[in-house]
Image (cartoon, rainbow, N blue to C red; front, side):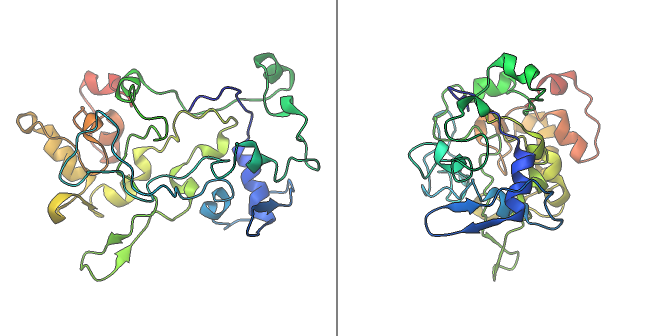
Length: 274
């Protein structure tokens, strides 16, 4: 997302603070700010939930340009997490739990977070953010609704409630901790994050060849299954397990072949970058 006033926000530092001393009441998260290192073993999903909540809007209609398929007629409940301040009149409310008057920068120190470009060098601050959207992605998301995150794997749900193979129970291995998949987020030092930057290498250990993903009519596929179908040009196969059609019909980038241990030989794949 693009913010009117860019903000400096070191995710790693805040992650350490929240991991140590936080308690929750019925109104808000209250955090005792301390700049000691986070203890080993603290669940990152609990830490990130200090500011990012489960989206409570329920199922959402598909954006224009995303074709309905047999197994994807709307964006499912529990697909997204919220941005800080979602439950409040503005985003400052989440920050002011700590930065009201005790922890600097305080409420009246606007340039403590909203910095001019010249301030970064003067304060020796290193601004790190994920790569910008590629030209292809800009085209895909051209008419995307502002209240729907620009996500490549639109079918991924944080809270999946996936039926087990025998249908007798539910399994959900997406709660291993946010930084298990968002591997670069602790390095981010800005609120201007165009994408959360989850690489397919985070999905590969489970879904490359073993943990099949449910699709239409009770079928289940792995990344290997879909990539194999994709290689047959006569089938004009559209990947459906993770992606909406606008992305799934495209040629997979080299990262998808790498996660299967296969070479990526076509130059068009290299240039396709997501």
